[in-house]
Length: 413
Image: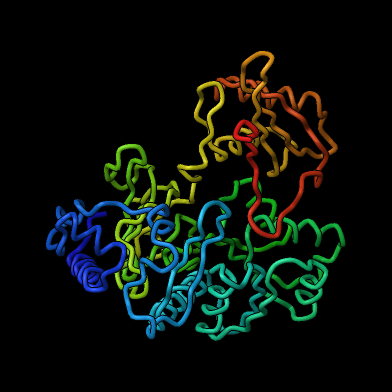
């Protein structure tokens, strides 16, 4: 997906804004001799940026406008290192709300809907983004925030919520709780807008079936506005990304080479009109691909495939590179196994070798011992790694109101 003339001119204006601001990136660009772009070839010479740069410029080193133009800040939900602080102008906030409203519209949500918002509020971009888009659309916002499942279900029943906005982990928790209590017939949900974390096909099927709803993947990250820069349409053929606000590339995460449409790699995003903290060629570390061709729904926005994972989620055992998404693919092949799992990696000092322990949930109709053997053999045949496997009953592993951590590498401790 080659950058077009309009986008190129928008990037050129962003570079000028950055250079005039004297911010962190202006110094990098001046040192590199970057004064603007006039061709796709010049655009490809602009260096990548990533979260490390944002931490190095903490707290407001990437701000590109005067303080009096900043109306809000947000921070990423990461827990390691310095937090990433992103400043927003009034136009940035309005643009974000506009994109989010588009997401709701693409999902078939209207002003008649009642949208229950469970992601967190505060410095995190999630809750307030879902709400701003809801209000722009003209729908009824029910701003619950995370947790207090008892209250969530009460409001869901009493207010007849028709749309659930959540992380996949919390959507799963709510679905299980609704079924446990036998109150599905009191629930009026029709659609779910799910974001913040990658989720497996098995979890997707369970949530959709358990709640009887259509599910939509919403995409975004704090550094680039927040959730709402794209969503999949009812055709379920990928997430439409709003290319009048952001330009998307896919690169080889190892070499940085830009990959052709259809090939899987790391998503790189450029903000085309963002004022407070413009970012050019930002490496997201999310793994996906640009789907070639036009969507059957008729929308012209380019499409990203479902997020497969993160390039920095990779872990290595016995010299084998492993991703959570691959683990989920293997578990989905085994009858009776749920979408929930946990991986523990440790080093056995007595034998000087790494060991991997996979804990997975299975329902009571399958034999746990034979299920463990099946999983062990699949890992051995498909990944050349033989883990220890423990099978536990459904609902044994902890559920999360936010993102669920699944890989615990004790070798780093």
